[in-house]
Image (cartoon, rainbow, N blue to C red; front, top):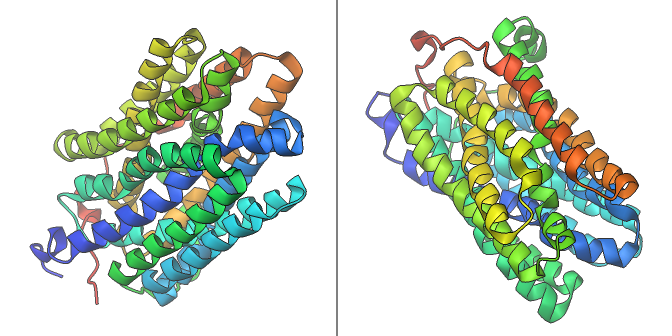
Length: 396
Protein backbone atom coordinates (compact mmCIF):
# COMPACT_ATOMS: atom_id res chain seq x y z
CA UNK A 1 0.00 0.00 0.00
CA UNK A 2 1.40 3.42 -0.88
CA UNK A 3 1.29 6.40 1.46
CA UNK A 4 -1.72 8.05 -0.22
CA UNK A 5 -3.85 4.95 0.06
CA UNK A 6 -2.76 4.34 3.62
CA UNK A 7 -4.51 7.52 4.76
CA UNK A 8 -7.80 7.44 2.89
CA UNK A 9 -9.65 5.80 0.03
CA UNK A 10 -11.63 2.73 1.00
CA UNK A 11 -10.19 3.14 4.47
CA UNK A 12 -12.96 5.61 5.30
CA UNK A 13 -15.56 2.90 4.65
CA UNK A 14 -13.61 0.69 7.02
CA UNK A 15 -13.85 3.52 9.54
CA UNK A 16 -17.63 3.53 8.98
CA UNK A 17 -17.77 -0.23 9.53
CA UNK A 18 -15.87 0.11 12.81
CA UNK A 19 -18.06 3.05 13.80
CA UNK A 20 -21.23 0.97 13.33
CA UNK A 21 -19.76 -1.99 15.23
CA UNK A 22 -18.78 0.28 18.13
CA UNK A 23 -22.15 2.01 18.13
CA UNK A 24 -23.93 -1.32 18.47
CA UNK A 25 -21.60 -3.19 20.80
CA UNK A 26 -20.38 -0.54 23.20
CA UNK A 27 -23.61 1.41 22.99
CA UNK A 28 -25.34 -1.64 24.37
CA UNK A 29 -22.66 -2.39 26.95
CA UNK A 30 -22.50 1.17 28.27
CA UNK A 31 -26.30 1.24 28.41
CA UNK A 32 -26.41 -1.83 30.64
CA UNK A 33 -26.80 0.66 33.46
CA UNK A 34 -30.32 1.38 32.12
CA UNK A 35 -31.27 -2.28 32.54
CA UNK A 36 -29.45 -2.54 35.88
CA UNK A 37 -32.33 -1.40 38.17
CA UNK A 38 -34.84 -3.59 36.33
CA UNK A 39 -32.71 -6.73 36.60
CA UNK A 40 -31.93 -5.84 40.23
CA UNK A 41 -35.66 -5.71 41.02
CA UNK A 42 -36.46 -8.79 38.93
CA UNK A 43 -34.00 -11.18 40.58
CA UNK A 44 -33.36 -9.39 43.91
CA UNK A 45 -29.72 -10.47 44.19
CA UNK A 46 -28.14 -7.21 45.37
CA UNK A 47 -25.96 -4.74 43.50
CA UNK A 48 -22.79 -6.82 43.84
CA UNK A 49 -24.25 -9.83 42.03
CA UNK A 50 -26.25 -7.80 39.53
CA UNK A 51 -23.28 -5.65 38.51
CA UNK A 52 -21.39 -8.88 37.86
CA UNK A 53 -23.50 -9.29 34.69
CA UNK A 54 -22.00 -6.23 33.03
CA UNK A 55 -18.60 -7.04 34.47
CA UNK A 56 -18.63 -10.53 32.93
CA UNK A 57 -19.69 -9.14 29.54
CA UNK A 58 -16.90 -6.55 29.51
CA UNK A 59 -14.31 -9.01 30.86
CA UNK A 60 -15.21 -11.71 28.33
CA UNK A 61 -15.12 -9.14 25.54
CA UNK A 62 -11.64 -8.04 26.58
CA UNK A 63 -10.30 -11.39 27.80
CA UNK A 64 -11.20 -13.22 24.61
CA UNK A 65 -9.34 -10.66 22.55
CA UNK A 66 -6.32 -12.93 22.05
CA UNK A 67 -8.53 -15.69 20.62
CA UNK A 68 -10.42 -13.19 18.48
CA UNK A 69 -7.13 -11.72 17.33
CA UNK A 70 -5.82 -15.09 16.18
CA UNK A 71 -9.11 -15.79 14.40
CA UNK A 72 -9.01 -12.39 12.68
CA UNK A 73 -5.33 -12.67 11.74
CA UNK A 74 -6.12 -15.95 9.98
CA UNK A 75 -9.58 -15.39 8.46
CA UNK A 76 -10.00 -11.62 8.31
CA UNK A 77 -12.38 -9.22 10.04
CA UNK A 78 -15.44 -9.75 7.84
CA UNK A 79 -16.21 -13.27 9.10
CA UNK A 80 -15.40 -12.24 12.69
CA UNK A 81 -17.89 -9.36 12.70
CA UNK A 82 -20.63 -11.51 11.17
CA UNK A 83 -20.14 -14.18 13.83
CA UNK A 84 -20.17 -11.51 16.51
CA UNK A 85 -23.47 -10.17 15.21
CA UNK A 86 -25.23 -13.50 15.72
CA UNK A 87 -23.71 -14.11 19.16
CA UNK A 88 -24.61 -10.63 20.41
CA UNK A 89 -28.19 -11.05 19.26
CA UNK A 90 -28.41 -14.54 20.75
CA UNK A 91 -27.09 -13.34 24.10
CA UNK A 92 -29.76 -10.67 24.36
CA UNK A 93 -32.57 -12.98 23.26
CA UNK A 94 -31.60 -15.67 25.78
CA UNK A 95 -31.27 -13.06 28.55
CA UNK A 96 -34.77 -11.83 27.78
CA UNK A 97 -36.14 -15.31 28.56
CA UNK A 98 -34.05 -15.98 31.68
CA UNK A 99 -35.78 -17.24 34.83
CA UNK A 100 -32.71 -17.04 37.11
CA UNK A 101 -29.85 -14.57 37.31
CA UNK A 102 -27.22 -17.23 36.57
CA UNK A 103 -28.79 -17.61 33.14
CA UNK A 104 -28.23 -13.89 32.54
CA UNK A 105 -24.62 -14.32 33.67
CA UNK A 106 -24.11 -16.85 30.88
CA UNK A 107 -26.24 -15.26 28.15
CA UNK A 108 -25.53 -11.55 28.61
CA UNK A 109 -22.14 -12.06 30.21
CA UNK A 110 -20.44 -14.86 28.28
CA UNK A 111 -22.34 -15.18 24.98
CA UNK A 112 -22.95 -11.49 24.35
CA UNK A 113 -19.50 -10.62 25.70
CA UNK A 114 -17.76 -12.90 23.21
CA UNK A 115 -19.97 -11.54 20.45
CA UNK A 116 -18.84 -8.02 21.36
CA UNK A 117 -15.18 -9.06 21.08
CA UNK A 118 -15.75 -10.46 17.60
CA UNK A 119 -17.63 -7.35 16.53
CA UNK A 120 -15.32 -4.75 18.10
CA UNK A 121 -11.64 -5.72 17.90
CA UNK A 122 -11.39 -6.76 14.20
CA UNK A 123 -12.83 -3.64 12.51
CA UNK A 124 -10.92 -1.20 14.75
CA UNK A 125 -7.74 -3.16 14.13
CA UNK A 126 -8.43 -2.97 10.40
CA UNK A 127 -8.64 0.83 10.60
CA UNK A 128 -5.02 0.96 11.78
CA UNK A 129 -4.01 -0.92 8.63
CA UNK A 130 -5.42 1.84 6.42
CA UNK A 131 -4.02 4.94 8.18
CA UNK A 132 -0.64 6.24 9.33
CA UNK A 133 -0.45 10.05 9.63
CA UNK A 134 -4.14 10.36 10.51
CA UNK A 135 -4.33 7.16 12.54
CA UNK A 136 -5.38 8.98 15.73
CA UNK A 137 -8.21 10.81 13.94
CA UNK A 138 -9.37 7.72 12.02
CA UNK A 139 -9.32 5.51 15.11
CA UNK A 140 -11.03 8.25 17.09
CA UNK A 141 -13.88 8.47 14.58
CA UNK A 142 -14.16 4.67 14.47
CA UNK A 143 -14.47 4.23 18.22
CA UNK A 144 -16.64 7.34 18.54
CA UNK A 145 -19.43 5.02 17.48
CA UNK A 146 -19.60 3.81 21.07
CA UNK A 147 -20.55 7.29 22.21
CA UNK A 148 -23.19 7.78 19.52
CA UNK A 149 -24.51 4.30 20.25
CA UNK A 150 -24.84 5.19 23.92
CA UNK A 151 -26.59 8.48 23.12
CA UNK A 152 -29.17 6.56 21.09
CA UNK A 153 -29.39 3.31 23.05
CA UNK A 154 -29.81 4.80 26.54
CA UNK A 155 -33.02 6.80 25.94
CA UNK A 156 -34.42 4.22 23.54
CA UNK A 157 -33.83 1.47 26.10
CA UNK A 158 -35.48 3.54 28.83
CA UNK A 159 -38.46 4.26 26.56
CA UNK A 160 -38.82 0.59 25.60
CA UNK A 161 -38.51 -0.57 29.21
CA UNK A 162 -41.16 1.87 30.38
CA UNK A 163 -43.51 0.90 27.56
CA UNK A 164 -42.94 -2.83 27.19
CA UNK A 165 -40.75 -4.07 30.06
CA UNK A 166 -37.06 -4.92 30.05
CA UNK A 167 -37.49 -8.33 28.45
CA UNK A 168 -39.27 -7.07 25.34
CA UNK A 169 -36.87 -4.14 25.17
CA UNK A 170 -33.94 -6.57 25.08
CA UNK A 171 -35.55 -8.56 22.25
CA UNK A 172 -36.13 -5.47 20.13
CA UNK A 173 -32.57 -4.26 20.64
CA UNK A 174 -31.27 -7.74 19.75
CA UNK A 175 -32.89 -7.60 16.31
CA UNK A 176 -31.73 -4.04 15.66
CA UNK A 177 -28.18 -4.87 16.72
CA UNK A 178 -28.05 -7.86 14.36
CA UNK A 179 -29.03 -5.69 11.39
CA UNK A 180 -26.48 -2.96 12.09
CA UNK A 181 -23.62 -5.39 12.70
CA UNK A 182 -24.30 -7.26 9.46
CA UNK A 183 -23.96 -3.94 7.61
CA UNK A 184 -20.62 -3.45 9.38
CA UNK A 185 -19.49 -6.94 8.33
CA UNK A 186 -20.35 -6.17 4.70
CA UNK A 187 -18.22 -2.99 4.72
CA UNK A 188 -15.12 -4.00 6.71
CA UNK A 189 -12.00 -4.97 4.81
CA UNK A 190 -8.58 -5.78 6.22
CA UNK A 191 -5.63 -8.01 5.60
CA UNK A 192 -5.71 -11.59 6.92
CA UNK A 193 -2.18 -11.81 8.26
CA UNK A 194 -2.12 -15.52 8.99
CA UNK A 195 -1.45 -16.63 12.55
CA UNK A 196 2.12 -16.52 13.74
CA UNK A 197 3.12 -18.21 16.97
CA UNK A 198 4.97 -16.72 19.87
CA UNK A 199 2.99 -13.47 20.12
CA UNK A 200 2.59 -13.59 23.89
CA UNK A 201 6.22 -14.51 24.55
CA UNK A 202 7.58 -11.81 22.25
CA UNK A 203 5.24 -9.14 23.63
CA UNK A 204 5.93 -9.79 27.30
CA UNK A 205 9.66 -9.58 26.68
CA UNK A 206 9.16 -5.93 25.67
CA UNK A 207 9.21 -3.47 28.60
CA UNK A 208 6.92 -1.01 26.81
CA UNK A 209 4.28 -3.71 26.39
CA UNK A 210 4.65 -4.68 30.05
CA UNK A 211 3.95 -1.07 31.06
CA UNK A 212 0.92 -0.94 28.78
CA UNK A 213 -0.29 -4.24 30.19
CA UNK A 214 0.04 -3.32 33.87
CA UNK A 215 -1.44 0.13 33.29
CA UNK A 216 -4.43 -1.49 31.62
CA UNK A 217 -4.94 -3.89 34.56
CA UNK A 218 -5.30 -1.06 37.08
CA UNK A 219 -7.06 1.39 34.77
CA UNK A 220 -9.72 -1.10 33.75
CA UNK A 221 -10.74 -1.57 37.41
CA UNK A 222 -12.05 1.97 37.52
CA UNK A 223 -12.94 2.50 33.85
CA UNK A 224 -16.34 0.79 33.90
CA UNK A 225 -17.54 1.99 37.32
CA UNK A 226 -19.26 5.19 36.06
CA UNK A 227 -20.76 3.43 33.04
CA UNK A 228 -22.36 0.72 35.20
CA UNK A 229 -23.25 2.70 38.33
CA UNK A 230 -24.19 6.19 37.14
CA UNK A 231 -27.90 5.26 36.92
CA UNK A 232 -28.21 3.54 40.33
CA UNK A 233 -26.05 6.33 41.83
CA UNK A 234 -28.40 9.00 40.45
CA UNK A 235 -31.50 7.13 41.59
CA UNK A 236 -29.94 6.64 45.01
CA UNK A 237 -29.84 10.44 45.23
CA UNK A 238 -33.56 10.72 44.43
CA UNK A 239 -33.19 11.65 40.76
CA UNK A 240 -35.69 10.29 38.23
CA UNK A 241 -35.08 7.30 35.92
CA UNK A 242 -35.49 9.60 32.92
CA UNK A 243 -32.81 11.96 34.22
CA UNK A 244 -30.53 9.01 35.00
CA UNK A 245 -30.90 7.83 31.38
CA UNK A 246 -30.14 11.40 30.28
CA UNK A 247 -26.85 11.22 32.18
CA UNK A 248 -25.90 8.11 30.21
CA UNK A 249 -26.67 9.93 26.96
CA UNK A 250 -24.61 12.93 28.06
CA UNK A 251 -21.71 10.64 28.87
CA UNK A 252 -22.06 9.04 25.46
CA UNK A 253 -22.17 12.38 23.64
CA UNK A 254 -19.08 13.61 25.48
CA UNK A 255 -17.43 10.28 24.74
CA UNK A 256 -17.97 10.85 21.02
CA UNK A 257 -16.63 14.40 21.13
CA UNK A 258 -13.57 13.35 23.11
CA UNK A 259 -12.62 10.56 20.75
CA UNK A 260 -12.77 12.78 17.68
CA UNK A 261 -11.44 16.07 19.09
CA UNK A 262 -8.63 14.69 21.22
CA UNK A 263 -7.87 12.07 18.56
CA UNK A 264 -7.12 14.88 16.10
CA UNK A 265 -5.21 16.86 18.76
CA UNK A 266 -3.16 13.74 19.52
CA UNK A 267 -2.08 13.41 15.89
CA UNK A 268 -0.71 16.97 16.07
CA UNK A 269 0.82 17.09 19.54
CA UNK A 270 1.63 13.46 20.26
CA UNK A 271 -0.64 10.48 20.85
CA UNK A 272 1.22 9.25 23.93
CA UNK A 273 1.03 12.65 25.64
CA UNK A 274 -2.71 12.99 25.09
CA UNK A 275 -3.22 9.39 26.20
CA UNK A 276 -1.39 10.15 29.45
CA UNK A 277 -3.51 13.28 29.90
CA UNK A 278 -6.65 11.14 29.57
CA UNK A 279 -5.46 8.67 32.21
CA UNK A 280 -4.74 11.40 34.78
CA UNK A 281 -8.00 13.20 33.98
CA UNK A 282 -10.11 10.07 34.41
CA UNK A 283 -8.58 9.49 37.82
CA UNK A 284 -9.23 13.08 38.88
CA UNK A 285 -12.84 13.00 37.63
CA UNK A 286 -13.52 9.74 39.46
CA UNK A 287 -12.14 11.08 42.74
CA UNK A 288 -14.39 14.16 42.43
CA UNK A 289 -17.50 12.15 41.53
CA UNK A 290 -18.74 11.66 45.16
CA UNK A 291 -19.05 15.45 45.45
CA UNK A 292 -21.72 15.41 42.71
CA UNK A 293 -25.06 14.74 44.38
CA UNK A 294 -27.41 17.04 42.46
CA UNK A 295 -28.36 17.23 38.79
CA UNK A 296 -25.85 19.94 37.84
CA UNK A 297 -22.88 18.20 39.38
CA UNK A 298 -23.78 14.85 37.84
CA UNK A 299 -24.14 16.40 34.39
CA UNK A 300 -20.71 18.00 34.77
CA UNK A 301 -19.18 14.71 35.90
CA UNK A 302 -20.82 12.74 33.07
CA UNK A 303 -19.52 15.16 30.45
CA UNK A 304 -16.00 15.38 31.90
CA UNK A 305 -15.56 11.66 32.41
CA UNK A 306 -17.14 10.69 29.10
CA UNK A 307 -14.92 13.12 27.18
CA UNK A 308 -11.62 11.69 28.42
CA UNK A 309 -12.84 8.08 28.67
CA UNK A 310 -13.44 7.98 24.93
CA UNK A 311 -9.93 9.23 24.29
CA UNK A 312 -8.44 6.54 26.51
CA UNK A 313 -9.91 3.71 24.40
CA UNK A 314 -9.21 5.36 21.06
CA UNK A 315 -5.58 6.17 21.77
CA UNK A 316 -4.80 2.85 23.43
CA UNK A 317 -5.35 1.24 20.01
CA UNK A 318 -3.48 3.97 18.18
CA UNK A 319 -0.35 3.96 20.36
CA UNK A 320 -0.26 0.16 20.33
CA UNK A 321 0.02 0.36 16.54
CA UNK A 322 2.66 3.10 16.89
CA UNK A 323 4.80 0.97 19.18
CA UNK A 324 4.42 -2.46 17.60
CA UNK A 325 3.23 -1.94 14.01
CA UNK A 326 0.04 -3.10 12.31
CA UNK A 327 1.19 -6.44 10.91
CA UNK A 328 -0.32 -8.37 13.84
CA UNK A 329 -2.43 -5.59 15.27
CA UNK A 330 -5.46 -7.74 16.11
CA UNK A 331 -3.36 -10.29 17.96
CA UNK A 332 -1.37 -7.67 19.87
CA UNK A 333 -4.44 -5.68 20.91
CA UNK A 334 -6.23 -8.92 21.80
CA UNK A 335 -3.39 -9.86 24.14
CA UNK A 336 -3.37 -6.38 25.68
CA UNK A 337 -7.11 -6.63 26.26
CA UNK A 338 -6.61 -9.63 28.56
CA UNK A 339 -5.06 -7.14 31.00
CA UNK A 340 -8.15 -4.97 30.84
CA UNK A 341 -10.27 -8.07 31.46
CA UNK A 342 -8.61 -8.67 34.83
CA UNK A 343 -9.53 -5.29 36.26
CA UNK A 344 -12.94 -5.27 34.60
CA UNK A 345 -13.91 -8.59 36.12
CA UNK A 346 -13.38 -7.43 39.70
CA UNK A 347 -14.00 -3.66 39.65
CA UNK A 348 -17.81 -3.44 39.26
CA UNK A 349 -18.65 -6.45 41.50
CA UNK A 350 -16.44 -5.13 44.31
CA UNK A 351 -18.04 -1.69 43.95
CA UNK A 352 -21.55 -3.16 44.08
CA UNK A 353 -20.74 -5.46 47.00
CA UNK A 354 -19.25 -2.57 48.97
CA UNK A 355 -22.41 -0.55 48.40
CA UNK A 356 -24.53 -3.50 49.59
CA UNK A 357 -22.40 -3.61 52.73
CA UNK A 358 -21.91 0.11 53.43
CA UNK A 359 -25.01 1.65 51.87
CA UNK A 360 -22.81 4.33 50.29
CA UNK A 361 -20.93 4.73 47.01
CA UNK A 362 -18.27 7.10 48.39
CA UNK A 363 -15.56 4.64 49.48
CA UNK A 364 -15.86 2.27 46.47
CA UNK A 365 -15.72 5.24 44.09
CA UNK A 366 -12.62 6.62 45.82
CA UNK A 367 -10.98 3.20 45.52
CA UNK A 368 -11.74 3.24 41.79
CA UNK A 369 -10.08 6.66 41.54
CA UNK A 370 -7.03 5.34 43.38
CA UNK A 371 -6.63 2.52 40.85
CA UNK A 372 -6.34 5.17 38.13
CA UNK A 373 -3.42 6.58 40.12
CA UNK A 374 -1.72 3.17 40.04
CA UNK A 375 -2.43 2.96 36.32
CA UNK A 376 -0.79 6.35 35.78
CA UNK A 377 2.42 5.09 37.41
CA UNK A 378 2.87 2.77 34.44
CA UNK A 379 1.41 4.86 31.62
CA UNK A 380 3.37 8.00 32.51
CA UNK A 381 6.60 6.05 31.99
CA UNK A 382 5.82 5.35 28.34
CA UNK A 383 8.36 6.88 25.91
CA UNK A 384 7.52 8.45 22.57
CA UNK A 385 7.15 5.66 19.96
CA UNK A 386 9.71 5.24 17.21
CA UNK A 387 8.61 6.69 13.87
CA UNK A 388 10.21 3.68 12.23
CA UNK A 389 7.38 1.48 13.50
CA UNK A 390 4.60 3.38 11.74
CA UNK A 391 4.79 1.97 8.20
CA UNK A 392 1.51 0.25 7.31
CA UNK A 393 1.05 -3.30 6.13
CA UNK A 394 -0.36 -3.87 2.66
CA UNK A 395 -4.02 -4.67 2.46
CA UNK A 396 -5.36 -7.17 0.01
